[in-house]
Length: 341
Ligand code: FAD
Ligand code: EPU
Image (cartoon, rainbow, N blue to C red):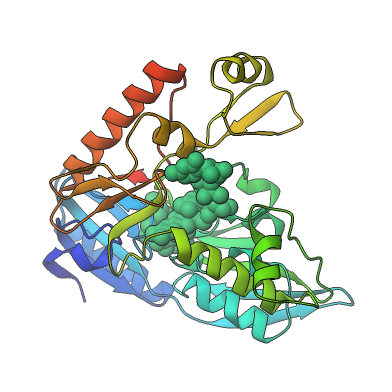
C-alpha cells in the first residue's frame, strides 16, 4: 500500500519533477489509519513530514518530500437532506471538483455554476475558499468532516469554524497541516440566483446568443472565458494565479491612481480597494517573459508557467523577482497564493 521513492511529476499541475520518499493513496478512513500506523513504525526521521495531496493544482514543489505524501482518494456524492429551498450534498474529498459542479448542473442544483472548470478536488475546495466570477465556496458551504492527524479523531467544522476569507481558511492558517479533510457538504439552491455581474460573463452570454439565463448557460460562459485565457495544465504546467490580488487602503489607491491613471481597482466597500495583480505584473514588463522553462503566461501575467523542465526553485526565483519589481514600481507587496512546498 505504501510505495517508496515515487516521482511526483504527474501528481502536480506545474509538472515539477521531485520525489516522495513514501507515497500512499487512501479511499477510506480505515486505510488512512493503517498508513499512519505504518508511518509511526517505519519513518523515524525528525525531518520527516506528512503532506496531504489532492489534485496537485495549487502547489509548487521546490524540493523532494522527505516523508509521506498521502493522496486523498475518498469518493462518493450523496444527497443527504433537502427542504423547500435547498439540497444538501455530501461529497468525498477525492471527488474531482469540476465533475461535482457538472453533477449539480445536470441535477438542476444551483450555486456552483460560476465555479466551473476550477481544477483540483473537493477536499481542497475549503482550503483556500476557492473562488471565481463573483462566487466563493463559502457561499455554498455547509460543513465538513476532517481527521486530526495527531489526535486521530474526526472533527466536524461548520461554516463559521472555517474562518473563510479571500483565498483563506483556518486550514491554510492556524490549523495548517493538522487535518485531513474527508468530505464536504454543500448547500445548493433549488431556485437559482444567477450571478452574472462579474467580469466578462454578460458579454460572453451575449456572444453565445443566450436569450434565457440558466445555470447551464452560465457554466458554459465561465468555461469559455477561462479557456480563452488560462493555460491548460495538460499543455503548459501551472497552478492558476500565482499571487493574490492585493487589497490596499482607498487612500493609497487614490494616490497610486494619480500616478498610474490606468490602474485597475475594485472598491471592497470596507475602506479597501482590491487591485488586479495581473495588471501590476504586466506593467512591470513580465507578461510573456521566459527564462529557460520558467515563465509568465502570455495571456494572463498572474499565472506563472513551466514550459517543460523548470524546477520548482526556478519558478520560485522568478516569483521573487516579480515581487521585487512590483514593490519597486508600485510600493505594493504581492503575496503568493500557491502553496510552496
Ligand atoms: P492540492 O494542490 O493538491 O492541494 C492544495 C493545498 O490543500 C495543499 O496545501 C494540500 O496539502 C491541501 N489539501 C488538499 N487536499 C486536502 C485534504 N483533503 N485535506 C487537507 N488538506 C488538503 N483556484 C481558485 O480559487 N479559483 C480559480 O479560479 C482557480 N483557477 C485555477 C486555474 C488553473 C488552470 C489551475 C491550475 C489552478 C486554479 N486554481 C484556482 C487553484 C486550484 O485549482 C485550487 O486551489 C484547488 O482547490 C486546488 O485543489 P487540489 O485538489 O489540486 O489541491
Ligand atoms: N489583467 C491585466 N493583465 C494581465 C492579467 C489581468 O491587465 O496579464 C487585468 C484584466 O484586464 C482585468 C483584471 O486584471 O481587468 C482581472 O483579470 P481577470 O479577470 O483575468 O482575473 P484575475 O483578477 O487576474 C482572479 C482570480 C482567478 C479567478 C478570476 C475570475 C485571484 C488571485 N485570481 O483573477 O483565480 O479565476 O479572478 O474570478 O483572485 C486562481 O485563484 O488560481 C485563479 C485563477
